[in-house]
Length: 146
Image (tube, rainbow, N blue to C red; front, side, top):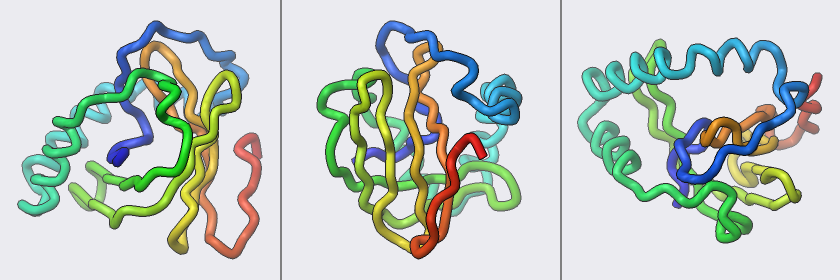
């Protein structure tokens, strides 16, 4: 099970990604990642409900897959965990998802539930980064560039 997708540390050599792939607002957010992630983890661990904190700790103990491992492609059961912000920690129910290799990155798609997402997982500075859009299940997703 893949438990935290948005930005995950990986253990492979870095691949330089063309900056034109990422929208400007994501570049700004990524520049503040370490400070934001630190605050979010502290908030989640100190103010999250006990059961949710247990699940977060279990996910953080997981062994990361090698970056862009050939075993990543395929159908998975995934889970989203939101840390920090208005609510300290939210653990969502597992959902079906698919990773598809496209030669330089992976396409990721959440295939169940009313809220969906589709986009690319790229590798930048030894970190997997998800660049995608959310949409409602019965609507067409907009292009990431839009």
